[in-house]
Length: 468
Image (cartoon, rainbow, N blue to C red; front, side, top):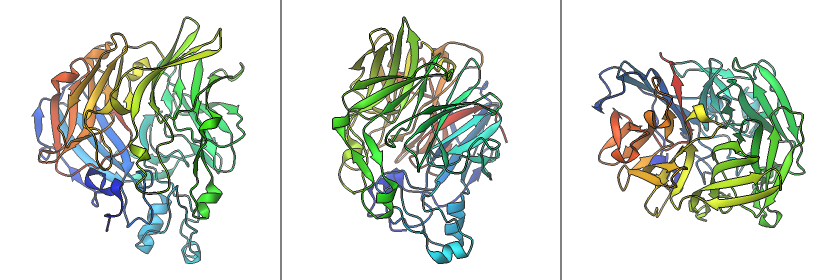
């Protein structure tokens, strides 16, 4: 492949073209893997299989899962493409057939006649991988999730036993309630402006749908839960699929409309409350909770929509900062304050405190300027009690992924867990970093070196007790 025209396919954004398996003894360990950890660290991300025809931002590559399985202080690794119908069709023809979200292509008649995937919107399955209700799912917000086996082999599309209907697109950013085990998610559709909160119980059975009406389909990437509510950010960022099919720029940013914050009762009965503020965009929440008649939301703030159809605009590199928003239920007013000046993204928390009061947030962070495609060379810890931000720098040229909080099975305290992320540092290699959540500045307690590169990707999770 010639990837020279695409900044976000250079360096550690470039794909790996082989699926690999490395067993016990193949992975060098520096330090010591905590012996109490049994499970798998998995991360999803784009991994282009064929020469792309359009690739501005890492949204369009075929999904590949990278997994490190830990047990008894030892590690194994494997990676696999998610076998989507779009990828299987392109393999059959040996070339790229489908376009990108920013530039859709009509599917050739000969492809459809040969039984290939007819939908021009590629289900990339490249955004997140979760384990809930004993289901391992690769997710992309534009379609159904894909069910996987523990060894990463693909079973196929998963519709939650018919709860998802044709055309439904399940978010890649669900939240799990630590009290009930419910998965709080949402669906959107390409043919509707509306939004539907979807709640599944701890066994992955559908419980409730809460409809939310909009006059126009917005780009709503994430949601946040609190004890009684679901909170979403409706920014003035829009995508028009008909314009994408015509080859026109389908994205629009209309700041004069402002940004709305919707507070949706989880019971599905009470009234939805909307707050309005000046325009901003956000990919990801950190956490949220209720306190004294107010809702506190911590999230990553971006000035405007950070992507477009055109190359070289630089909008994707604009600052991202941790913010705290307070919604006052009594006065129906909103305050929005910057918490840290650190460039950050992919924010996470101890999931046992999801939707509850908490102290620490964590995020992929950067303390350097990026001249080309942006990245993150640090893991950051944000202390919401003291206001302190702590960074560990993996190296000037390093690329560090989303830091996932892994709880210590022997302790309920946030500071006693670990942070895991993939790191690639030229000259050092590729490894899984394991850092003490209570001593981020001290750096990794263990590095699990992987003999193949793990490209920059999106979201990861710890799958407790999931083994091969």
